[in-house]
Structures are given as C-alpha cells and as structure tokens.
Length: 225
Image (tube, rainbow, N blue to C red; front, side, top):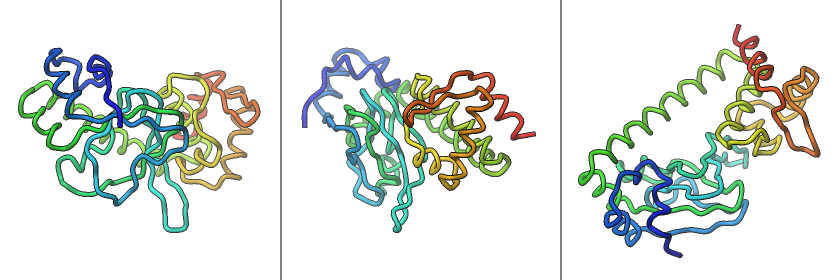
C-alpha cells in the first residue's frame, strides 16, 4: 500500500478544517489503495479495515445475493466516505464495494477516525451531516420504490446518478441500472426506449446520456402522480 500527500486529504469534508500538522498525522496513520476498474475493495461480511474515503475515481456499494444477483445501494465519488458504520459498532462490512473506474481509496482505521472525532468537533459535525444525508437518501429510495412505476424509478436513477457522477453520461451499464431500480433488465430496456422517444435521453453504443434533464424530471413527476 502507498501513502498519500497530506493536502490531498482535504477532498474529504472530514479533513477540510484540519491544520497541516493534523493532516500529516492522518496521513501517517492511513493507507492508500489504488484499484483498477472492476476491482473488489470490500466484501460484505468481511472484517472491516476501517473507514474508506474515495480520493479519485468512483465505486459502487452493493449487496450480492447467494445466487449472484446484485443490488446497488449507491455510487460513491471523490470525497465520499464508505463503510462508516463498522467504525462505531465494530461489526463486519455491511456491503460489497467495487470500483466503477480506476480509483484511489484511503483506508482510515477505526481507532484513528474515532480519535479524530474526540479531538475535533468539526469532524463530528461532518459525520452527523453525512449520516443525516444518507438517512434522507434511504428514505427517498424507499418512497420511490413504493410509489413510482419502473419508468419513474429509471428516470430518477438516471437523474440522481448522473448528478452524483457530475456528468450527463450514466456511469453504469443496463444490468446495473436494473439492480438499482429493482426491476428486470427487459423492463428497464423498455423504459429507456420510452425515455429516449420522449427526448429525455440518448443512447450511444450502450451508453445512456441525459440529453434533457427537465424532460427527464417530467417523467419522474408523472410517475409519482
């Protein structure tokens, strides 16, 4: 494992207000993983290495059934944290993490992160904000799955995940999109065709591109009515 430049740690809101000497302390007590696209970073149920922070690239957080079916919970990009819960409950990894593209990931051992919380109230506040944001996202996801039809869920996923990726191109393939919205791939394919015919998206060699975000949100709203 490699080390990371201490100033690069400021990409995470947890470390944004630390002094240079404090950042250096974090740097000395963390490890950097460099992973290619498609690499498994964490496995659900395995012993937790600590808090993970994406420094570059992106990863998907998912759960995999015994039959191999994948349910994607969220995408994480540069600056996002993962595997927060085991830092506090001492449990195993709650989900599997796989790189979507070549990524650099910082591992912060649980004792190191807990010491930061005790030393700095700003880190604790950022942690609370992160947990609150995640709770809001889970609540919205549950609502979408309950109240929206597949087309609405597909439109919502395309809108949310492209904004998270800071790109108009959806970063995952069609099978992964199906796992996000909880529908069969062929049903998702029909929904994509309808969104394309409606002018919300374009497709190019398997890539889905949001071409009109306002139209895409109209599909979301119509599905929720």
